[in-house]
Length: 75
Image 1: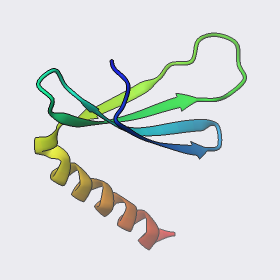
Image 2 (image 1 turned 180 degrees about the vertical axis):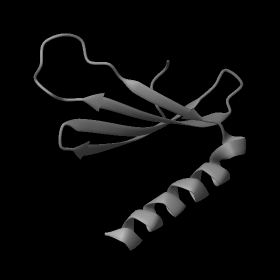
Image 3 (image 1 turned 180 degrees about the horizontal axis):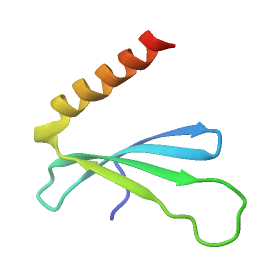
Image 4 (image 1 turned 45 degrees about the vertical axis):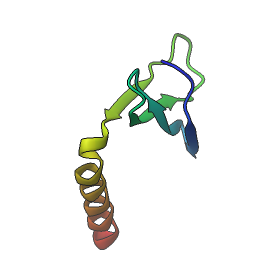
């Protein structure tokens, strides 16, 4: 995977999240959300990634916003 064209880092306790945008071989942008544990245990850290392509961004954004609003409503 090449270098992101945009990146935002979010530190959250024992996790670090990265929200990046990349371009594919046809120069189309896509979103990558990565989660990396930061605990001090021995052994390799496993990075989890989600790839969201442009045609699904709006639906993905609506789902994330709805989930956030639901969490805020029950707090």
